[in-house]
Image 1 (cartoon, protein in one colour):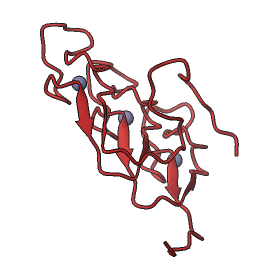
Image 2: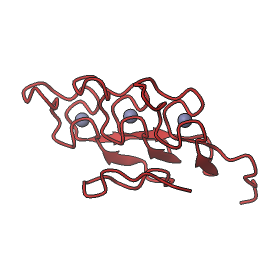
Image 3: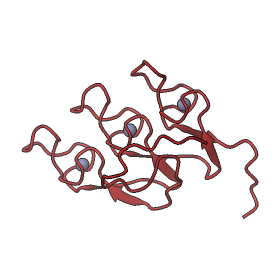
Image 4: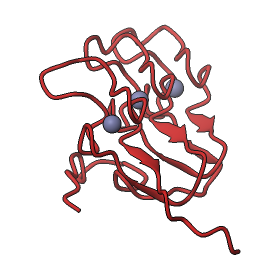
Length: 132
Ligand SMILES: [Zn+2]
Ligand SMILES: [Zn+2]
Ligand SMILES: [Zn+2]
């Protein structure tokens, strides 16, 4: 495993590839300010000014936007993968790094989200046992 951990210094809630089990997170798009990143007077469309977002666990940091919640192409646009939350729900806690994009959430040299993991950077692990 060779996780590419970017943005460790910041207020990120976890590491990429780490399974998150909380329900409420800081809004990635506005970084909890409640405003649009570039237009301070406009309410954040993701959290509606609340600063926090709700995600159904289990979840992971959105690999496509790196938890920022904004599109890599235009930071005024919300990320298509996590819809601006910076966190995205996953089906199973048993995950592994997406072999196609190597956990980046997009193909190298492309701004499009990875089709294999749908931009999440992880895929459900095949051999996850269901015993709880
Ligand atoms: Zn927000
Ligand atoms: Zn995202
Ligand atoms: Zn992928």
